[in-house]
Length: 446
Image (cartoon, rainbow, N blue to C red):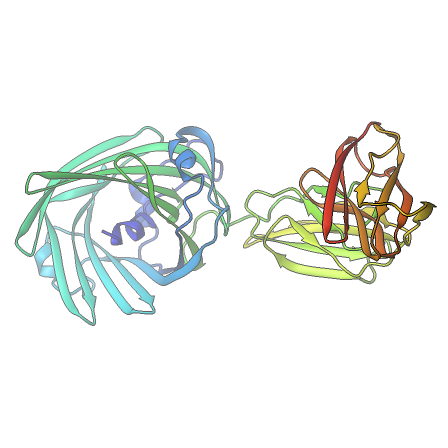
């Protein structure tokens, strides 16, 4: 039944706006003779798909980007006049339209010739001839399946009952179609206005019934994505199609500009190996992070594109130095403008003061004052000589300041932290020495 996904790739026409997308006979006829090439990308990560499946109605956004996809195959689809040199076309003399699909993958090339009859009020599917290195297989339905109802829009429904015989076994099939959603689908290719078409397929063989649901996101004359599920709507498959050439459809638009998160603008005492973070942008497939020692970004200390996530650690920064940073987002539709740059200043070289004699054990004392604004003091005790590291991290575990990072002899020490550029909140400070770690909390109130 896989040919059905590509059939749907040429079924739907939409207005340029999200609302009132509809399907007409002419939307299919205008694509006739135009080859459209897609690359197919599938994923086995079904996280969050149950919520996507349950989202029906108008004005919806279905985000399918939060997972890893891999290339499956390359496919070219074309609507042609019957019989168009299609093999075994004489089996389908009632047809007036042929859908040719050529798929290439690591296992070889397969060509499907699907036979339809297009009328003013519907599109009917008669059968398919499959041609591959294994031979030719002709599979026809006892009565044609109505694949589309014209005109169709949100809440349009139609049903077909038929049967099919394969290798001596007859399956009774019920196709129940519903246009159950209208909105925007977000794939790694971009964001697109679309309809969502649900197919509930009930298959009965030897008295056993199986139900499968397929959710197809369509707009204009192409398919953007499909989700497969069982009868209880448990996700079983997901794929999206990236259009390489031909056809129409809504073209992807560049993503919005990212919002920078941490460090806060003007933050001081930032570690020399900070993790910079920003908010996720709907439809973005990657990000570019630039860090510079000058506000004009005429040169870079860090310039990295194709970042998949929304955070990146930057290492090797100098102490007591102001840096500027910015981020842009990218997808198939282009690249956003850079976010308005922020700046931060790295911490000074360790200013730790020895204040006491030889302690008997390793310990980290509570900072003072606490709560504080904007600076606070830390005391700790080291009983053995060695490398000592005292850092400040936020509640997500991101290191935002390094206060001590050097070898120390046994003693009691004090240092401080100026949090002028940090937002109010709860922070952790952590001491590592002698193979031990101790962590405490503190609160910044502004």
